[in-house]
Length: 398
Image (cartoon, rainbow, N blue to C red; front, top):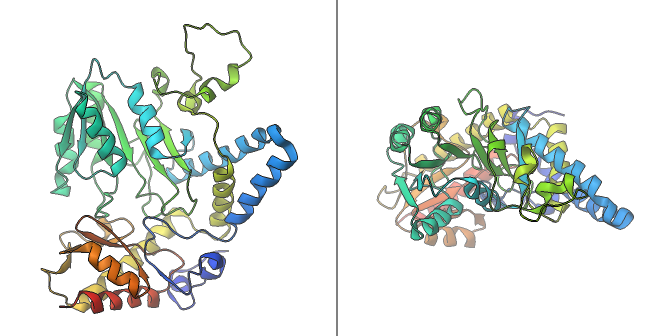
């Protein structure tokens, strides 16, 4: 089955019936950039996980591994990286910790990042700075020169640069990251790109972006509708040089029967090198079923990008027509909508108060700092989007 944008713009939205448990047709769920609704078939995945556990007991892990591979393959497709090595984890924090622990921070005690990274990096890097690691935070504004300015900070003391492909507060796409990759390669540093706010609303082709040799992290909790526990770390081709200090026993899973040298920690090659330990595989059953649902309904990156752009246009136009005082609430018009990911960020005097006021009117949005964020999703109609903006007009007008 495949859809046209007009099929998903009309009322009722043609996809909405497949999300009945979340009642998406009856609610104004504009938190799609944070937590999209799960399709009803997600429950099939969870039931299958319980069924396998009951039937096969400890023998379930072979089946669980097959589900994990389905999820890894899904991420490879989303990254246009068919031969990539993909390690899975419960959160990007788990995976970023393994990445950071593999860096030689004694010899290269310098990390370059931005002041607009998600809390996973913000908090962890701040804590490392308290322990003496030099953390350089490049201001995100102006975004047009961000990649160039990050690249200029990379030197031979830098262990890694860490930056988002789409900024989590504003949805602005960071272009030119290939320049950062070149700078890192020149000085022997690593580049980690956070693609969490890109996958599902921005087409990502690592080779085309000049990012074939970098680390990429992200997950399926936001736009991909996988739910919790489904994050990944894509390894570059040279990843086998690294020995993460934070390492789980799954990283030697294929050698458990071998005789151990108590003084030596051995690592598998490829994605298993960055593996963790025992986990709840239900998340992968759920994600694998949702991946099949996306394929069955033609929800592929190019279509989802076009749909996200259309929905952003609807929201932006409806907001502009409200003609609200810019000192109260406004949007950034310095860049065209094609330079944004999957949500509309509005700068407000009091974003949290507006979010609470919208919730009382049945509109679910969210706020980050000074930004009120409206995140559409494929199952929302144009009428639902404009209704949400009308509600904003009611609560924001002085």
